[in-house]
Length: 173
Image (cartoon, rainbow, N blue to C red; front, top):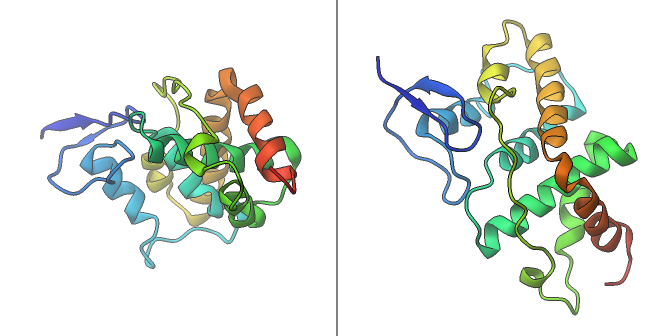
């Protein structure tokens, strides 16, 4: 069986032919694993942390510098920052995602800049969540995966905190 390495998270999975996200870089097998999490037959325990799956995956698969990827990574990292550093509830993830994109006098593509991604070698991935044997274990893995991805970006935490103050906490920018 041929294997492939995901360019984003570095997980090694059996190679498949298939789609990938249009700007988050991943292998087809890793993207398929991510999509499996939205299958109604795939079970997770009810948990607010399940709302962080998209933020975690996006932060672990940042792609290459472009206006869209820069904004995407910045916003998803601000969500993780809000949850893990400011104790927002995971159920507030959508609100946190929406705040930085509000209309303002600063064009949205001028708010953020590219952050060099960390290495995700030997880190938890979406495939670890999928491999969980019970819905409870998979849900615990979602929380651990989210936290670990946030921790991997530690060299940029101060920049994310600055953006968070300006674009999430501020009422005017």
